[in-house]
Image (cartoon, rainbow, N blue to C red; front, side, top):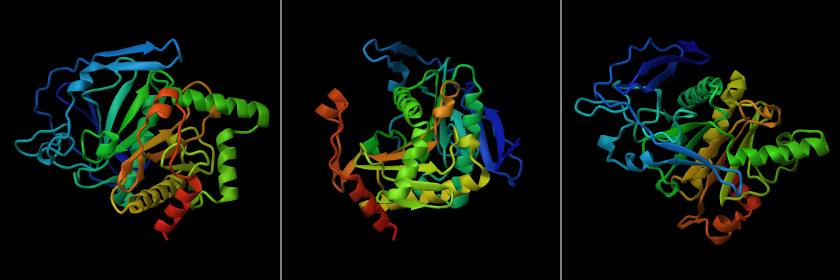
Length: 347
């Protein structure tokens, strides 16, 4: 199947889970190899409960406690299969691959997927070529559109965790997509603020934030014709960068071809600046903020938030008493100083 900017090939793993390959649009038609592992059908144990104090949905996925944890490189389940080492991806090579998580956080209502950015175990998103990173963007767009069409999904959240300090359990370059069967707390908070702003100011909160950052310029790191990257005025994390398109769109699937090109260029630039901050790969979380699938969609504004808990070359920001107990963040770094440093890193 050919989608915009990519060729998609659907197949199944031996336990019935979906596996999807994404190749360049001009690539040869892929004939997927069979998964010979003979895995039993997955039986995830997922329980959703509402916290009566906050209204937040808490997910209990006890089967995940047995998931694969930091295996040696020659036993990585996200690498392409080799003789004697069958993996989650039966083919001997791939560009981008997506499969249902074997240890999902959501099952039944909702869905959890793994997105492998490349078959090269020793790569990172930072060092992907422009074309390979652009293929990942096409993958995110296609998965967002398909998952958003499911009746049991309320919000689609693509993200990447990088670095052991963040809690990564597989070192292969990959991300995940959570298709939540509910609206997550962070999104509920943002939309509440956006609704208040719309009532008072008559305009979109996110668009106004972007306009302010571009006008002031003191926290802008880099920009191109359709995207701007900046450190937010009230950043919570020691290193935090937001990437906004100049045009309000609800999700990745609504981006035009040129906007996807420009995002890829700017994101790779930002990631390289982050890795240059302390002279080694920065642990980070990259979190896509997309509009909800159904409710308040007009209030949303697609953007990507990249954050790191490293507050100095040899120090980590831990969420201690104030942050964990009261949700009141106290930062060791000033947003304007972080922005200036990141601008210099790329100069």
